[in-house]
Length: 225
Image (cartoon, rainbow, N blue to C red; front, side, top):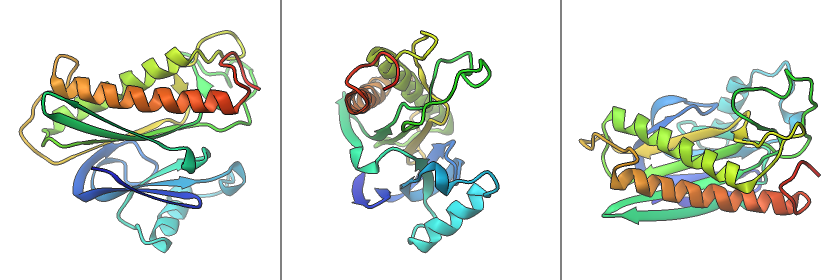
């Protein structure tokens, strides 16, 4: 599960075969069939206000041989990815994540609206979860909610405080992708072995990624460097 190809500015996750991928990715969002989920590392200067990001990203992916991939964008150094696995009662889950917290937010409010300036540090948490079981569409949606809970729990646990003292729960540009084959598994909630495995894998990946980001950015989770 999840073979990784890393090269400058690109992180390519190979799912082994075309899978049904559910995401809110910048490219090929919703339910899509894809064998690859691709991270593209960018900087603010790459994405100017007048740029049509979807068109640009489609051309860029095609030029690099991945026109059919689900595409993720990040300013996090893609070489800092974290890969984890979890298995519970035969349910096997793999997770690949990059974690940047520079544009962190606390759910229920927006720093820009509150007049607080944005950090210039790395932002975006991008998460890919591959599940070995065949899922119904409803179970795949439920799996996305479990991954989201795990992401939020990991960010809360890292203790990153926003400038106004609230604790971060994620970033303004997070993205999660869930890859699985279509199948008959109908549930992936917290009471199931599959839900436990998803939670374990994502919690471990984001916890490690958040700790790395905090260490790289001043060694403290209290505010920004």
